[in-house]
Amino acid sequence: MAKTIGNLFAISDIHLSFGIQNKCMSIFKGWDKHWDRLRSNWNNAVCERDMVVIGGDISWGKTLEQAFPDLKFIANELNGRKIMLKGNHDYWWTTLFKMQTFLTENNINGIEFLHNNAYKINDLTICGTRGWINSADYGELENKPAQKILLREVGRLETSILAGIELGGEIVVFLHYPPIYAHEENECILEILRKYAIKRVFSGHIHSSGMGKAFIGEKYGTYFDMITADSLGFAPRII
Image 1 (cartoon, rainbow, N blue to C red):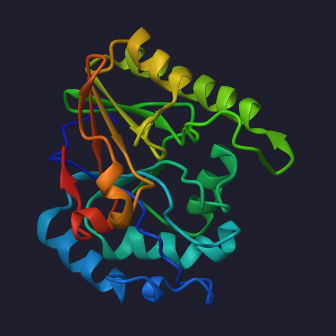
Image 2: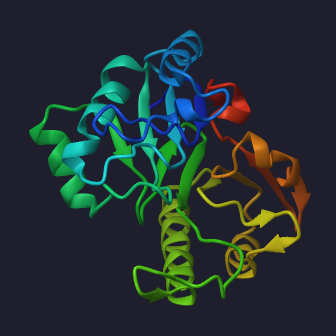
């Protein structure tokens, strides 16, 4: 994907639910029929030559089959090509091979997955992973200690960055979980960012009600920013 593309945009936490009926986001303030605003704002800003990174929490579907209507909407009704990474609610996410095969078998085009890999977009190289919560003793997920999950995500981030270094260009990292939030810092993730002198990091997960505690600015030589859909008014942001 080293060919010249137009602009690079990003947005996170679009929370589509066309394939599952009990997860309508309209119960939250400002989210009524948010997919209509997303489509309108997206297509007003993004053209077919552009690329958009979607930073996780993409579909409420628990399987690829349930996520299919959401992936079809993204592919067919939203302009440009897309690169997706996993969010904490993307239970449909599976292996890279299975996801790529599913897209091919269902004639879904223009979607790539950021999963232990990297993509060169003009002079920028896109790296990243889901990340993890900033408190290592938070508990357990699926009976796995949080520390083990954290170290796995750290490994995936480093694998992605190393793949990006091979491609060349300025590395831009996308994480679903912000590594700095309120008074908490994810030291393991931050260590990797410092190790490879990453200059820009974009995160999601934090919705508008929590944005007051979100960290936006430079720290440890890296600029951190947020791309959550509702905080952006459901409009992809140019990077």
